[in-house]
Length: 132
Image (cartoon, rainbow, N blue to C red):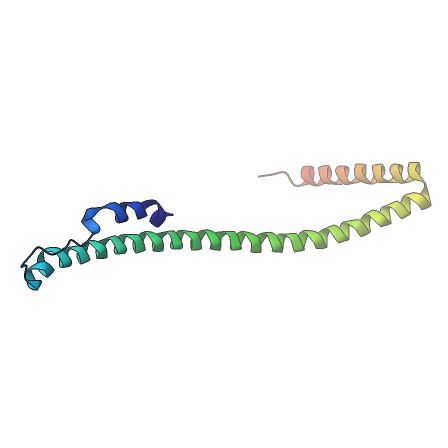
């Protein structure tokens, strides 16, 4: 894009064109006054284009590495969550079996009593060992 944007600049600019030699001009004079300065300007232009190109490549590689790191992290996280999801589905199936066997009201009552006991034992533990 940088090159395409600036291509007309290099095409149309007489600064980057090699002029015709004047009549009876020595080759050494033509080389010193026209050819060598043009080659230097072209070298500088190519150098700046390459520097710009390599800077863009470096930024793109950094972005690619960041994206790959995120993909690896999300893939690992997905595997962990997939395993946990399978385990929770099994627990849900067991819970549904229990509700079918005991009946919905009885299962709800047992769960409620277990929660009350857990809260009570947690409150007891907190009061037995106060924070310092």
